[in-house]
Image 1 (cartoon, rainbow over the protein chains, first blue to last red):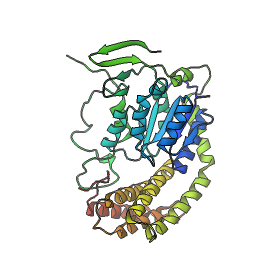
Image 2: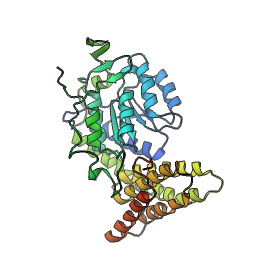
Image 3: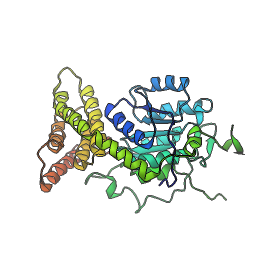
Image 4: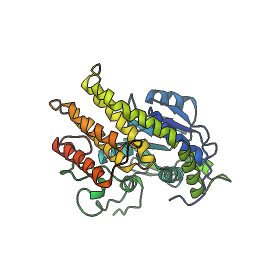
Length: 194
Length: 168
């Protein structure tokens, strides 16, 4: 939870999403936080054009864009020169299965938020993305925020948790992840190396 | 630009300064509770409009499903996208059962993409459920809602679709 006050006034924000409903609701939330006039584009191509023309401070993008996956757009961002390369990116998704969250994380996204997005979740994750203490990592195959985490197993043992699913089903291969589990995959923690 | 870079093999760690990190620390700003309360107030301000539009969207689902001008894939894609929108709006305003029904619709629409042999007529069940759980519909009692949702889960299980849209 973000405990300090955040000054989000004047934070230039790019929203990449073609769903007018989702965008409309995000705009209300961001306005409530003090982010005045986010720019909205619908496609990955339009996002690239906007990002080439203007230095945005924050990017919120849908995981499924009409012309590309959100993860591919994040990968493109991480291939650019600073400051765009370092720009905090938040991926919003309805598809919160581990493979999708992993794809977003491994593309270099700072945060993944599952829909529906609440003001509490969004504010806290923006605060987290703004946290300058998270190191940036560059390797031959990855550029993005430090994604190391200490894996202690899925809470409650092996497999899925009952609460992850919307009902009683057969064996699920890959259940939807809760927001806490998504955060645990992206939040770096100190790891012990021999 | 960057400070205190550290390398380990071909891995480089450093603090990458961002404008966001700098700006949020400027004097002023809003406390968490204040910012969230303002966002909630603004969301409430557009609630009626959103629910009206959601009603129109739900009312149009059947037309998408029955549109003979569209291919099966186009119908499934559009219903999946509509389910996504319903999850967003209904979730924001805490219509929990409607969110569950829309999730089922999305799961089924994606699952049926890989099951050509199955009729997309199966989608009539989640479509009916969504209509009955619509915010503007006559409220159902809890037992009826549970039965509807159980029917959806059974259907999803029956055709072997797990929540990620793959086929079991």
